[in-house]
Each structure stands twice: as structure tokens, then as C-alpha cells.
Length: 157
Length: 64
Image (cartoon, rainbow over all chains, first blue to last red; front, side, top):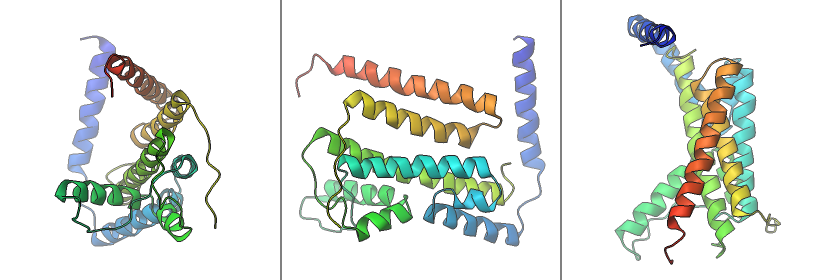
């Protein structure tokens, strides 16, 4: 093992030990974590903005909004809540997972539904890519909301 | 509100845009400091593109 590798390993184990030794989050911190996580979900980057993590707030808002906007502009199909079992349980499960992923985009999901965008399936390859773009915007936004929660409760810097 | 005007992108452009934004978010979520983030962003972007193109070539001989 090289010297640089040994230093890296030592730093990583020191960081892991610091996390283990940290005092558990207080109820106030937990409540703030939930609030900031929810705000971060509703508007991408808002949780980080309120935590004064300006660089992350800008990048998350820019990336999630760009992916959601591009998805819609490519002809994405936005999944609506549906419990229709006529096409079988597997299709229903896929539909529900798609809905949960899309819902992760927060305000963008509700804005798209309100504007009646993405209601119809577009039979073209780029439309399928658009669906994936919007879905990934939602999933990335959920990750950023979890990140805001972790920062608020002191699990991350 | 009527339908949005649809953008036209090639598959490669769509893949590059996807890789760009996803790598950007990953780098800011997992790394601290601009140098570390830049390195991780470039690594993720390269992997997205390389794996995407590799899988594309692997699937090339198969009919749909």
C-alpha cells in the first residue's frame, strides 16, 4: 500500500469514527431535517438554500429543472396516480413506480400535471427518453432532499 | 396551455445531456471541494458515456 493510499484510508476511518461518536440528533434537529427535506423535495435546492449551501442549491435547482424541462420538451409521458388493474399487476406496479419517481420532481410534477403536459404517450424514441429524463429528475431530486435532511440533522457537512 | 414545441436531439446528444446533469448532481452530493468534485464529475461523465456506447455496440447485432 502506498503512502497516499494509507493516508486516504486513515482519513476515511477517522471520518467514520467521528460520525459514530457524534451525539444523536435532537428532536428539534430532526423536525428541522424533515422540514428542510420536504422543502427540498417541493422546490429543488430550496432545502440547501435555507441551509446556506448556496453552491449545491444552485446546482441542484439547475440540474433538476433542466432535466425535467428537457424531458417535457422531448415528449415525456408523465405518470398519473392510477390503480387500474386491467393490464395486469406487473403493468400496475411499473405504473406506480413511475408515478412515485415522477412525483419526486416536486413542484415540476404538479406544474406539468396542472398544465396538462405529458398526458399522452408519444410513439417516438425521443419521447421515451423524455420520460426517463423526467423520471430521473424526480429521483435525483429525492436524493437532494435526503441530502438536505442529512445536513440538517448533522450527519453530513 | 397547448403542447410544448418538441425538441429534436440525436440519441448521442440526449445521452450526453443525461450524463452531464446526473454526473453534476452526483459530484455535488458526494464530494467536497471543487477539485474533488471536478474529478468525480469527469469520471462519472466518462463512465456514463463509455458504458452507454459499449452497451449500444453490444446490442448492435441483435434485431429488435
